[in-house]
Length: 404
Ligand code: AMP
Ligand code: MG
Image (cartoon, rainbow, N blue to C red; front, side, top):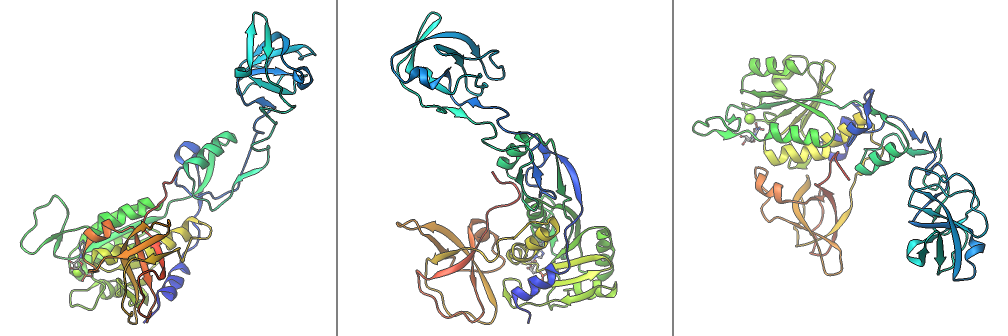
C-alpha cells in the first residue's frame, strides 16, 4: 500500500498554481498574493512627531528650565509654515511634520504653558520623539511577497502602502459529492437506519476555511448511474471531492462508477489510519479525490491531502509540513503498518511545554471527539511503544485562511 508521503506527492503533482485576479484590499483577507507588493509611498512621507508636545531645537533645551516663544501650531496633517529659530518652539501633535529648524520634540508632560511662551523642564537630545522620513518603509520597497496568505496585519500594511488593489490567486473551485443511501441532509426527515449527512457540509466549510470555493453537488445514492450523473456536474471544477463509497463493500461504487466514465485511477488505498480507502484519479480534466465516508476519516484526509492540494493551487509558499512536536500525554502502544493520526487535546505543562494527549477511543466515526481535538498526533508505521513524555510530531487542527 502507498505511504502517506507518497500519496501526498502524487496528489500534489497533479496540481499547479491557478490564475490570478485583482481584488480590492478590503476583500483580500485570507487570499494568497500572486504578486510582490511594493510600497507606492514612503511612510512617514516626511519626518513627523511621535508625541504631543513642542518641536524645538535641542540646543535650546540643553539647559533647563528653558523659556521659548511659541510661534505656531502643527496638528497632524498640517505643517507649520516657516522655520523654528533659536529661542522658538512650535506646538506639535502626534503625526505632524517636524518644522524646519526644529530637531527634537519635548513632550507636553515636560512643559508648562505661559501664554505665548512655553517653559521646558526637561532636556531632549536631537531626534527624540521624531519619526524619520521612511522609518516604516520607503517607496518601491517590497512589503509583502507572493505566496503569502493575507492576514489582517497584511491588509493594514497594503493599505498604508497605498495599494488599493491586490493581485491574488483565484480561489480553487471544489465540487463536493457525498454518497450513500443512508444519509439525509440536516433538517430532512430521517427514515429508519438513516443518519444525517455531515461530510458534505464539513468539507465545504473546510474548503472555505482554507481559501477555496465549495460547490456541494448533493448526495448521490448508491447507484452507479445516479452517481455518474451527479459527478458530471463537477465539470469545470478544479477538483471533484467525493466522500464515501470508496472502500471494498458491494455498495462502494465511486471507483467503479467513475471508472466506467473514464476516470484514470492513480491509487485507491493508502497505509493510513484513519483514511485507508483514499482514492485519487482524474476524470477528463478534473482531478478526483475520494475521501472515506467515515466523518473523521473524511476530515483527517482533508487536513493531510486536500489542504496541501489547495495550497499548491493557491501558490502558497512552503506549506508547513511536517508539523511541530509535542510531548505525549499518555503511553502509546506499538503501531502497526499504517501511519496513524490520533485525535488529541493539546495543553501546556507547568514548564510551558506543549503536551498532546490522544483520546483513548479513536473510532473514525466519532465527530464529537474530533470536534474537541486540538491536534493530530502522527505515529509513523511500525513506531515502537512510546512513553508519556516522548516528543511526537503533531498536526495542529486550528487555523485557516482567516488569520489575524
Ligand atoms: P462508506 O465509505 O460509504 O462505506 O461510508 C463509511 C461510513 O461513513 C458509513 O457508516 C457511512 O454511513 C458514513 N458516511 C458516509 N458518508 C457520510 C456523510 N456524508 N456524512 C456522515 N456519515 C457518512
Ligand atoms: Mg457508503
